[in-house]
Amino acid sequence: MVAAAAAAAQGGPSVVSVEEGVGESSSPPREEAPVPSGSGGSGGGGGARDICGQVLERLVADGHAEASDPEFREKLVAHFGRLPHSYQLDINVDKAADVLVHQNVLAEAKDPDRRPAFHVKFLRIEDMDHAYDSDASDEGDDDGDELSVRQDTQYTHIHEVVFSTIDKPKLLSQLSALLSDIGLNIREAHVFSTLDGYSLDVFVVDGWPIEDTDGLHKALEASILRNEGSWSGSSHSSAAERTLPFQVKGGEWEIDKRLLKMGSLIASGSCGDLYHGTYLGEDVAVKVLRAEHLNKNVWNEFTQEVYILREIQHTNVVRFIGACTKPPQFCIVTEYMSGGSLYDFVHKQHNVLNLTTLLKFAVDVCRGMCYLHERGIIHRDLKTANLLMDKDRVVKVADFGVARFQDQGGIMTAETGTYRWMAPEVINHQPYDNKADVFSFAIVLWELITSKIPYDTMTPLQAAVGVRQGLRPGLPKKAHPKLLDLLQRCWEADPSKRPAFPDILAELEDLLAQVQGASGKTVQDPANDFSTKD
Image (cartoon, rainbow, N blue to C red; front, side):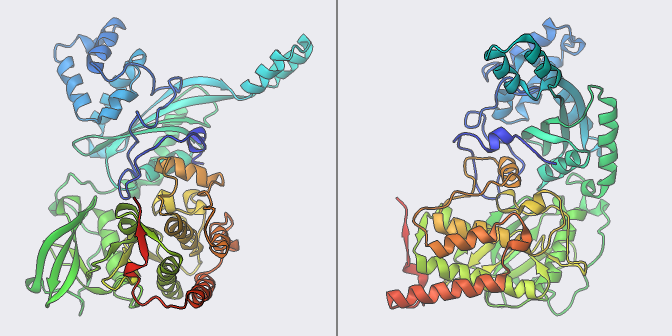
C-alpha cells in the first residue's frame, strides 16, 4: 500500500516543478514544497548557509568518531557537493547523524551486489487518536471517561528507510513497490539524485508493528530478492560486459545504416536521444539508444517497441519505418512529426484550443487507441507527451516502449506509465487491462480542455497518492457538459464502469458533428483554430 504523504497530497497550494519527463524520481525544491520540521528523519532547521560546517560541529559535539578524522571535512564537503541544493535545505542539523547514514548508504551502493543499498531506523511511536484524545480532555469530562479514551487509543510505529542505487527511470515506482510489498505505508518521500548518477531516497513509513528494525531489515531484503529482476543491469558497466536477453531478428524493416543521415538533436531522454534525420530522402525521427545505458530493461523496452511497431499501421499511430538492431548502434526510425507533441503544443507554446479543434484532436487519439485495443495492444503510457502532430495537425499515438500485447488472461499487474496520468489500479499494483488506457485518456482530455498540467501543485508521488484516495483534477466550469460527463466516466475508479474506446469515439464524433453543424464549418485545417495564452 503506497499511502504516501496523504496530507501533502490533499494539502495546500504549494507550486512544484511539473515539467513533463522531469522529476518522476526527483523531489521538488524545498522552498516551494516545505516539509514539516517535526516529520522524523528529514526536514527541519539548519538552513543552507554553511550547512556543512554546522553538521560537522554537531557531529564533533556529539562524539561521532568519524568527525575526528582529519579528512572527514573534505569528505563531507564532497558529499554535499554531489547532491542538489534542496538536500542542504532538507537536513536537520539537530539530527546531523542522518548525514553519516546517507554517506554510508551511498558508499554501499557503489557495489553492484549490494544494490539497492538501504538502512532502516526506528523514529517514534505516534498516537493515532491524538486529536480525539485532546478534544476529550479539553471538554472537561470526568477522569473516568478520559481514562477510558486513553486506554482505547491506538498507536503506530514510524520508521525511516533510506535507499541508494543507480538512478534510473521509474526508480521511485520500484522503491515504492518494495515498501508496499511488505505492507508499509509511505508518509513522506525525500528523493535526490547525485551528480554522478546515484539516487538517495529517504522514506518515512508506518505499517511495521514493532520498534525493532531487524525484522524490517530482513523483510526488505526478502522483498528485494523477490523483485530481483528490477535491479538487473547497470548503467555503469560497459555494453560489452552485458549479455542481452535476446537478439531481434532482422527483416525487411532492418535499416541500412549507410542510408540513414543523422541531423539535429530534438530531445534527450534518460536512456537515449531523439534526432531529426533523413532516410531515402524522407524526413524521419531517429531514437538512438545510448551504449552506456544499454542494460536488460532498456533492451527489453527497445525490442518490445520494435516488435509492436512492425505489427501496426494506422493513420493515427506513428508510422514505423525501420530499426537498427545490430551493434554498435541501436535505433528506431519513425516518420518525422513536425508538429511536435500535444504536451509542448499546449503547455510550452501556451495554445488554448477551441472546442472544435479540441474534439478533432481527441477523435484522432481515440481512433488510434481503438486500433491498438482491437489488436490487443495496451499502450500503458498514454499522455500528451506521447501524442504527436504531423504537419497537417493530425494527432498520432507514439512511444511504445512500455506497450504490451494483452495476455490471454486479459490482465496485467506491473506498474508502468507516468504517475500524473496513471490509473489507480496500476498505481495499486492490482490486475488491470486496457481500461487503464481509458483512465489516462480522461486525464489527456482534461488537459486539452483546461490547458493545464494535471495536479500541478503536487509532486508525481503526491499525485499518485491522491488518485488512490479518489482525487481527480478539478472540473472546469466552462467546458461542454457532454465532455465533462465523458471524462468523469473515463476516470471512474472501477475500470468496469469506464467506457471502451469505440464507445468514446462514437460520442466524440457525434459531438464534433453537432459543433461543426452549429458553426457551419468543418475542421480541415486546425492550425488556426486555437489562441495563445498571454
